[in-house]
Image (tube, rainbow, N blue to C red):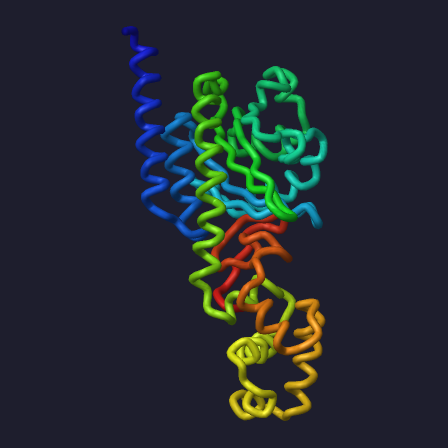
Length: 287
């Protein structure tokens, strides 16, 4: 067995071990990016992994990186430039219909010379020394999850064997992501569920909604929060409107049972630090 075959066998084994670890970890959405970073790095020998969500309605995105750029100003410029040029090709746009179930590489569409001349390469990737890229996209309701592997300048293109391992990872990540969504939602207290169900409610309105979900009367809520009864009723009208319901019983059912993350993708409202076109975006717990 030659050295290349030995190396491929080791990569296959490392990929399998990391996939087993991914399932064994039973990650929620907070832990999932780190697990995915480890899987992709083991399978592809890449220099950087990006875990990103793209919102279909606004065209905005949020991203976490296995090795964030230490220069925040450059990272902010790059993030803004990406949004300007992403629509130049469906590969860069992470178009779910274009990708389908496939894993694709930049070398599937552009020669090295063509890549170097692209505005998105010159303004987004090359300033950070990035060249090679391989990724997959998983469509969700209203948004898409993208996992991409990157190599720096001077490194070879991703091989067919590495693409095939990335294809294996895609199937596992699609399954684990659905479980992570459910696991994260089940662990949320009511007020946090409301952050994701109705991100435009105020903190006070979320408190009122929480007590509605726990079966409290308007009078009890007014006493608990130290506000007037008319104020509670005003908040209720807003809550019903945001939830699209007509009464307190329907509101309580919606808060307890409705799928979270239907208004915005998880990375928009879950606590944490993510990059967007506007730079580093910080989300606090229970905003």
